[in-house]
Image (tube, rainbow, N blue to C red; front, side, top):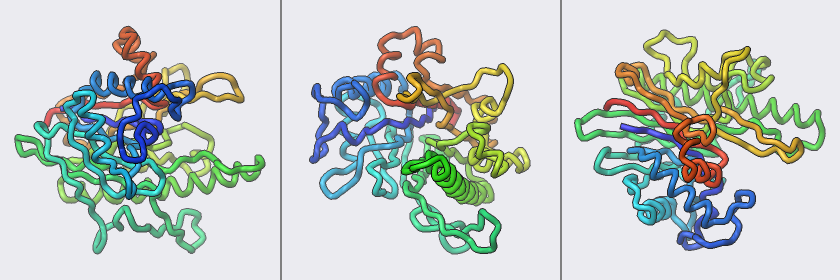
Length: 337
C-alpha cells in the first residue's frame, strides 16, 4: 500500500466561490502559473503518484459556501483518480485545511480524534506547557489542528494516521533584525510545543499497541537552522522520539540523512524562490514517519522531486507538472498492510 503526503500550494484558489474547478487561463496564486496549468499539473502528479491514501496539506478551504470534501472529490473525479473519497477533520480559519484523499476499495477511513480526560488534550483545544522554564506555563494551540484518522484495510489491519501542518518558524511581520530574531524564537518555541503535544499523542497510541503513521509538513528538520542549537533539538526529533527506546521511535530515513554534515547529499521536499537572492532554496520539510512495527517489512520511502528523483527527472511531463503544481513535492512510503 502506498501512503503519501502532499502540500499543494494554494489549492483553495483553484475553486470558485461555489466550489467549482477554475480550469481557465487566469493566473493562479503560483508565480506565472495559470490555474489551468496548476490543475493539469496536479492531475498528472496525483495520477503518477497513484497512492492509496494521501494527506493533503493546504487543502481547499472549508466555509459556509464551499466544502473541502466536495471540492477534493470533484477534483478526483475530474482527473479519474483512484483516491476518489475525501475526509476532513477539524476545519480551521487559515484557508489551508488538512484533509485526506483515499481509495475506498483499499481502506476504510474515519475521522477519529482522541484526547481529553486522562490523555493529552484534543488537538482542537489548547495545551499548557512551560517551554522557557520560568514556572509560568504558556498556552499553545494549533492554527491547523492535526487530522486523526482510523484506517482499516480489507484484511482488517488497523492503523492510526495523523496528518499535520506544524507552525512555520518564519518571522512574518518583522520590521527589523531584532524583531525578526524575537519573532523567530517565539515561533520556534510554539512549534516545539506543538511537536511535544503531537509526541504525547503518539506515546498514547504506542501504549495501546497501535500502528502509527505521522505525516505532513513539519516546517522543520534536524539541522535546518541556527535556532535548533538554542533549544537543543528539532521538532522532528521530538516527534520521532529520538531519545526513546527503539521500539517506541518513529522512523523516516530522510530525517536522519538531513542531520548529516560534510559532503553528504541532503534530501529536499520543497523548493522556494528567493527574489532578494535571485535563486531557489530547497528544504526537507515533509515527512512520513512510521512506528517500529510498520518498518518490519522494509518500507520504501520516496520523495517525488523533479530533479533528484531519476524517474521524475527523465519523465518530462511529470517533471514539469511537479514544478507547476506546488512549491512542495509529494513524499510517499510503500508498506505492507
